[in-house]
Amino acid sequence: MSKLDIASLYLDEIKEFFATLGEPKYRAEQIFKWLRSGITCFDEMTNVPKKLREQLAEKCYIATVKPVQRLVSKIDGTVKYLYELHDGEFIESVFMQYKHGYTVCISTQVGCRMGCSFCASGLGGLYRDLTASEMLAQIHFAAKDNGVRVSNVVMMGMGEPLDNFDNSVRFLNLVSDTEGLNIGLRHISLSTSGVVTGIYKLAELNLPITLSISLHASNNETRSSIMKVNKKWDINELLKACKYYQGITGRRISFEYALINGVNDSIKNADELSKILKGIMSHVNLIPVNPVEENDFKRATEENICRFAKLLNDRGITATVRRTLGADINASCGQLRRRAVKREEE
Ligand code: SAH
Ligand code: SF4
Image (cartoon, rainbow, N blue to C red; front, side):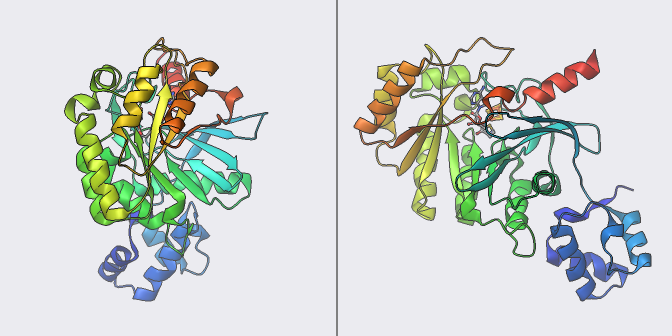
């Protein structure tokens, strides 16, 4: 019998489970609170009777992440973690220090099925979805390891959060719970490569998170050549979904644009981009592409990056060049895991 992933459950679900054990509701509340504090085993629940702790340990498990690698940037203190999960899979997280607070970038899947050609996470396909508790564990660990309160989360590590919709939403509800990490939804960004059906579903929930769209191209030809998701939902459909999302939530949408030398960094591209984003309350994040061993994309030159940002801003589209944190520990998401998996295969 597989054990119950208790740290992914909502309070009501724990209450239902406890009713089957013949335990009172207040115990469910007590346990929910302990789980939200980021404990890693039932014996840490000191005000819960030993017998119940044993019963819980028999029927349930608490998801944890085990650090197997920890890289610290000498430039800005950014910490990059490679974690091993209970089944031997690996994921990555990044802990960053911004002016507005400590931020953790979490993974939402092991691998990714979207297969964007510039990204290391998608190279081996999707291995499995992460549970909400495994997403939470990444934040609890980073907070404890650095001895701080984490105030911001970005769902921009490995994986496509909207391809793991239910667990991602469960995560959002649990991470913002006042009994737990209490990270406000306004301080959370969810990044998607453009899973249009997921954007419509998310719109219906009307959460005050920031939706971030990985656009990376100004026309369908280029986008389809680097992001196969564009063959399923093209730029037109994607931006239609964005407008719908904005209509419901009233939130500004972020567009990620990784500048790749000779691929999407021309004046024509900046022109096209400014045209397609007209009418959307947006913010464009320009990121020099992070070269990955397995492909030969090169980052755009400083000159082209500045030119691109200026062209957009001149045309009324707010664009900023994203500061790269942890430049010396490089390894954009997916690269540490890839190396670890390769090592195991050797
Ligand atoms: N799957 C989601 C979220 C995870 S990827 C998504 O694609 O949006 C997080 C961000 O990193 C995305 O904007 C993605 O396009 C970007 N990214 C992936 N590989 C990159 C690389 N080599 N250089 C720069 N950005 C990259
Ligand atoms: Fe998946 Fe995002 Fe990487 Fe594309 S960029 S392969 S969607 S993780």
